[in-house]
Image (cartoon, rainbow, N blue to C red):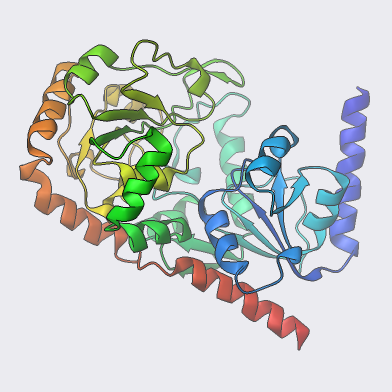
Length: 398
């Protein structure tokens, strides 16, 4: 009861602050995935912006549970505990918000704060107002949609990685402000390094401890209805690790990239020499060292397409996912790689890749897919967003 009263008082003070006080010029507040470690599009923008302006005015909102780790990994960043008094002061007065996820609806945005929403992926699954039924604990379909649309109304800018995404965002978010048709800032790294073998070797040494052997990356989608109870999720291993490793050469490495909420539930005991679970590693670095991506319905396929490397699709729960969860925007038969419809077929395709290094029937399809979804990715998105921030702060100084 006392905590609830304190929370209400806090929110009232927060919103009064956002209404009464003017913005602080040049101050930019960044957040990735609502206060996780700096990553994704906001971090790519930060890395570009810090080259051109005083980093003393650039702040990162970090959940208290991640502060210690953030200080260790990013000692040079100005870190602010999320929902602390300092965070409240900065959030209500920042010149810019640069976020890749939604903010709480109760949080009032200062009328002069410019909100750049970077988002975090090309949509394959239905989003926002397009979702027919929401299966997440703690909410219902109508409330979820209304909250989503309200939040999108506060975005001054929304980054679109391609025309396909822009058309969906416009409808699913009911977004009516300015699109930035520039590709994703996080993908600049992929565009600019896709043929950098020296970097690939360095990253392989860092992540898996060796340069030799192929790397197969398994990156499944997040299943928001696969929970034990509210806030507690589990990972389902849809294959046998022994059979997977038998399909590979001895020097090859199989990387599992799970959602952070289920990483601790993965057991690779007995296969540690060839199987790695990579939860916290930079996903772009995993892409760059990988020779094959295995996924299901994850939007990782769109970013990985920049590299024009082989992909294999394993939608083991297709009927349930398509009909009962979010559904798809894209005809799944158009994915740029073979679709394993059974566990045995998955192993067969991996053996084929191990032999040929690619899927010969899909070479042209990979190229067409890249042209459709990655044509806006030219390696300069971070610079373009940074320039918006710099131009605006220059105007305020004048």
